Length: 312
Length: 95
Ligand SMILES: [Fe+2]
Ligand SMILES: [Fe+2]
Image (cartoon, rainbow over all chains, first blue to last red; front, side):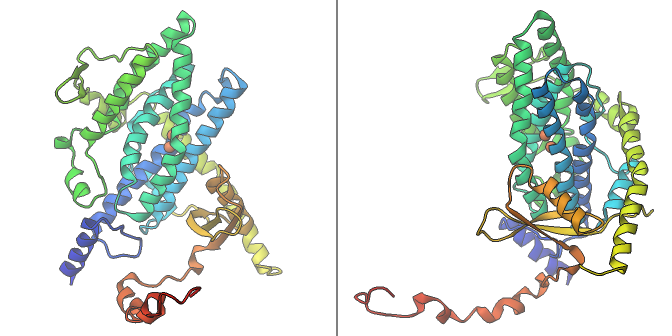
């Protein structure tokens, strides 16, 4: 029985059909998706913190309005993704508790601090830029609810990247101090942005299943290359320099070659030793715990009304 | 661990007047007002809708994909439900 089901399942995937919540799926497909989608959701939510750090200090009312809208979008992205993840039979409570206990991860990039206003530019341009590359590819993922969430998210993301690039280009063309800040932000965010695509394909534990099941459509290295190719030209255009002495154009492959990523740093930050790991997680846990009475009160109120005059 | 997760509601949006409502995702909320407000904040930040429906997820009944053959098969061999089944003279206009 199980082999027939597996053949039907793989057959659908090979034909490019989507898998929907109530379709039969292998346990490993389900757990892989829960891990990946929840990590993605947690990243959107935790990712609000480094940017939220600058809302009260945005340099103009326009910048402040834009940043609030951007951060609010990220909250929305997190919720679209939790919603997709819950269709796999895991509850929101479980998802949140996996984040709090460290069983579920979020993207490393959000463990780096935002030191100046230029960091907000660098995040929008590079971090959202890298996320977009990944998310555009995931629109074609085989799990229906995940794919639909990605389509929705991609529509909203391009504003994020443009607002970041606008900040960077303004600062890169501003006073010498602003130019310095812009370059410094690029220097600090460039390598962590490349790490966002994950380990090399050969070192990635999850690549092969994910490709066969079409959960992932392109490999980490392919996506990273696409991101580098795009970003180098964008940096050139505003007169900023990518902090990589090995970066050079390869006429034959028509791609940029780039230096080796510091994987020790990558693993160090993943394993909890980044600048802001503790702070990010503490903030989330505290907010969740402090909100407990609100959830309780809201439920009690709903119940009270249901027991009274029932006007549902 | 139970943190009193709020109930799950499915959200349907009508993209513009006259159009059909479409499912777009879910929200958690304690009651119907909160569900509507959460749905508005989450799914219509860019004027994606003119009207929203929310319904408790537990109230939605779905057919079972495993049974979809036997469930939908009866429609399979009734080609006479399509206009192309009928042969009429090309000269007959307005049909
Ligand atoms: Fe996002
Ligand atoms: Fe974004």
